[in-house]
Length: 74
Length: 273
Image (cartoon, rainbow over all chains, first blue to last red; front, top):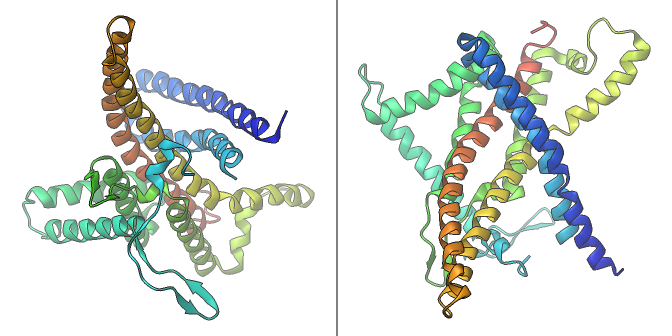
């Protein structure tokens, strides 16, 4: 296998990091909705933490993107 | 990067060339590129918003209501609930970063003049790692400076949770320092990756519209199925534009929220907050 095609395959494999980010976001929003439906009056004040958690979870997926871009272009 | 079509939208070219300046042995190219130009437009828009909304009338007009709503988004939902009353001096900083990122993000989605005078004018500054990294490093350095001003050498208590045995504290402190140092990286990468990813996906679907449409019009028979795919892709582009509008606002908010949380740690250090 020549190095260039190995790089492309690696870049494709790096996108698998999105599996974790997707599962994490699903857990996050699912649990938020569950809590929000049980206690709607408390939902509004916790929305900031929802988005913060989303940002931190999502950054794992972004790292996967960065690895893919590094493999592709560097 | 020029080989891949969807990446062409992020290419930087000079609009107003300026000769490189050498400052202390370092040669700096101060040319106005399309990225710089869009940032200047963003700054001009922000100044216009400030001028239009900063009237201070008792009964707010439209523009003042807009400005007050945006200010309340930062003050009422971020700074005051997270930092508390000590956070008031930092509202201008957070608000400035939030508005700048928001306007730059939105310009990338909304403001589109396309191809004029042989150049591509539409550009998203926040899809450049250099721009987001500058904002992230600015936030990071501000947090460190404010931390030292507020707490002196007590700033280092940030890395050691209270009431931990010293052997464990060394271990925990090591990881806390690493997670602290990686913050500007994640802050920059998050904004950059979200905006870049969204724009690439939009571009890919937009290229499907043209390619499948041309394929569908090329002949009769199965070829015409291409028109169906073209229409679906067009719908996808419209839906993605809506999604990108949400992402533009959300990422600006997330950037501001993380800056607030990082500031909170040093402002309220040791108060168990």
